[in-house]
Length: 95
Image 1 (tube, rainbow, N blue to C red):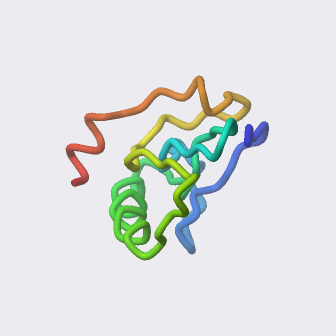
Image 2 (image 1 turned 90 degrees about the horizontal axis):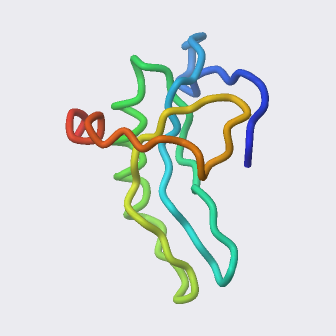
């Protein structure tokens, strides 16, 4: 899904704008997208990334689904999933 408006960080009580999308590549048959695990501001990207890596352990996939590893992407309103830049350095920092 492409969000065209600014989004607030999903951490309760935080009012900062989301600058990161925590997501994994996901496909089912011929359909693919970035499966969103959370939208976060700079201050909360690490916590949401770590939480997503724990949550995924509880959700087995059916045999037709394919899911890549969870990553941190730069989030920009109006920019489609396929155009978001993966921020590997943050993943290393927050692991």
